[in-house]
Each structure stands twice: as structure tokens, then as C-alpha cells.
Image 1 (cartoon, rainbow, N blue to C red):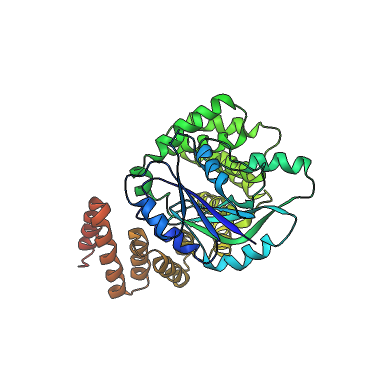
Image 2: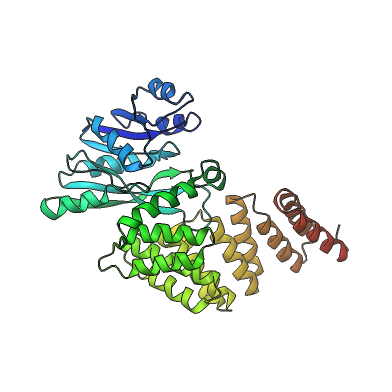
Length: 395
């Protein structure tokens, strides 16, 4: 069966080759809509055999994505951005899922590269080339609204989700967000949409979370709570509402309410990988209040879901250290370092535990690495740590 890749771009000459290489020998055609590039993006796309179309940007991602759908000839459509790549290992699962004559939408798990807390999300990026499927919403454009309408009347269709990571996304790294003013663009677009759809739970969750991120806590909480009042809410959206309310209440030092929302989030029937943030954050709350065994259990659950979660090993190491289980704490810290060798705090805490058990040479090596990393991002902490070691007679 034919598979079309639909992608919208602007000035993506650096990342686009990675994206298109990832779908080589997977898709049958590449439809690329350029919204005003001034670099070599169109030329690079053509080198990969893409059909390139121009579209005047109108501050509406849905409009641009719908333009790409107009040209797709495949029976199925895969949608990627130029800061995403398709995971090779997922291809056999994709092909099996597309063989079903009842599948209309195949949801895919996307992993945020470098994310500290919530690395996974479920995205509706693989669907049939159905004439009624279209994107809606100017920001966080999705086909879900049209899919819901279709399955209401065409009862033969099913929506499924693949359980393995399918897409790797690098666009939410701090540098990429700042470089492209993503937060400001998102806020403007979502505020405009919310004015016309004041009871949309999805935009309440996304815009409410954005407000919390930029420090407008009260404004964000009000919007997140409004989302919870919507009568019919998708479980993944409900999770996001509770999860971000947990973050907001934690920032306000209202720990009981934060725990309440994290616990509500964890009870929801969604893909377990999507709950990593709630497991981790609830674990932090329990650790801070002295419930070390409860925290340890939550961190271990998170690591069962994602054995590559560096922050999970770090938090587990902190808990094991507090429990006096120094050997396992060292192992947890070392695993965290293997996964994220640039985390100064991990080396610093590893140095503390090694010193406690008398391994002075190894401890000093860990502290030295922590100081070197702190010098780059936090020179004051590097100086404080260096001074503390000198006071103890350790050089």
C-alpha cells in the first residue's frame, strides 16, 4: 500500500536531511509545503525526491498542513516535522497496522529528546487518506476533531495506538524554543483560538500549561481548572490537566493539592509511558515529606516504563542515599551519568556518597567532574563546592 509523507517547513536546511533520511525506503512519496524559506530547504527536499509546493504563511499551522494533504496520493499519510525523525524499529509495526481495513487513525508515541520530566506524548500522525480528514487548530494542529466526526457516522472505523516509540523530536530543547520564539507564537495562536472556543479542554490544557511555564501561575491554574469542568474529556487531555495542576500547586507550596492531582493523573487509563512525569513528580513530593519507600516505589515504576530515564535514576539515587543504601545509590547515580554525562548534580551527589563510604579518591574524581560542569553553567556553585572541599582538607 502507498504511504505519503506530508511535511511543512520553513528554513530547515540543517535538520531536514535527518528527517527525510529517516523515511527513506519507508514512504512512497514526499509532499513538502514550504511556507517561505530563504535557505536551501526547497533544494534539499528536491534532492530527496520531494514534491515541493509553496504556501504563504498565515499564522495557522492547520491551514498549512491541510495544504500538504491536498497533494498526497498515498492510501495512508504520515506527518512529520523537520525537527523529527521516524524510528527505524517502528516500521514493521506501522506496516502491520496499516494492513487492517478498519484502521482509520494510528496514534504514535513521540519522544522529546532531552526532556527532563515528560519525554513521551501521543500524536495523531498516521492516518488514512480519507477525504473528510483535515487538520484543525492554528497551533498544535491535529486531525482528531475531524476523526471524531467521521467515526460518529462511519461506524466501521477504529482508532489504534502503537505501544513503542515511533518519532523522536528535538524541537522542544531550550535552545530551539528560544531561537524560534516558540512560546510567544504558541501563546498568541492559542489565545486567539480560546477566545472562539472557551470550553475546549485541549486548548485549556496546553495554554494553561504554557502560562504555568512562563510564571503566570494563577492564570494557568484558572485555565486548567476550566478544562476539568468540560463534560466529555479525552483521557490523555485529562491527564495533562491534572499533571500541570500538580506542577502549579507544587510551585505554590500546596503539596496536598499537588499530590491529589498527580494521583488523579496516575489513575487514568492511558498508555503507561505517558504517565512518567506524574510518577516522577509524585515521587519527589513523597521524598520531600519523608516517605522514602513510597518515593522509591514510584521511581522504580517510572524506570520500568523507561529504563533510559536519567532523572529517574538520579531521583532513585537520592532516595537510596537518604535510606542509607549507599551501594545501590552509587549504582543509580552511575546509571544516571551513563545516560546524561553532563549533569553536575549527579556527579556531586555521587561524590558525597563515595566520601561517606571512605572512597576518597573516587569521591574527589566525582567532585572534580561536578566542579568542571558547574564552571560552565553555574560558576558560583563551582566555587562553593571547591571551597567546601578545601575546608574539609580535600584538594
